[in-house]
Image 1 (tube, one colour):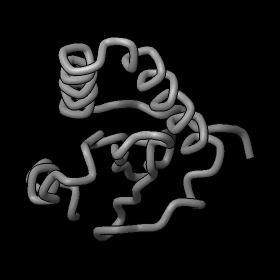
Image 2 (tube, one colour):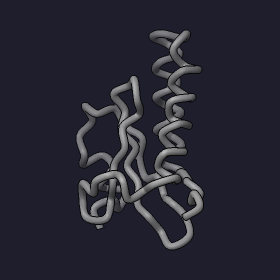
Image 3 (cartoon, helix red, strand yellow):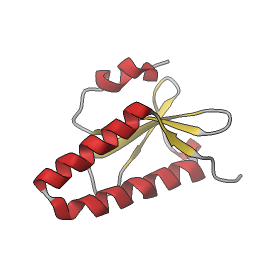
Image 4 (cartoon, one colour):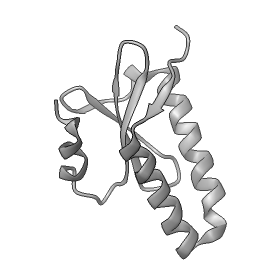
Length: 102
């Protein structure tokens, strides 16, 4: 099975930007590693999306190695849709309100 494209929703793109901005303000030297680890996680998800457990309905999650961020995604017929990239301490209601629980 060939890798599936992993696409971020606008909300997930905003999550990523907010996380990078937080690291930029608190520990700027960490930003490149954070972005690289998110890219690696997206690659792993695209390569084997069924490897990751379902957490709410059809929504699965994958950890960003070395960081306390989680990528929430769903498998679509032609791609993987990332609906959120959030710190693990965030309330799940934050992304469930985006339609993640269906």
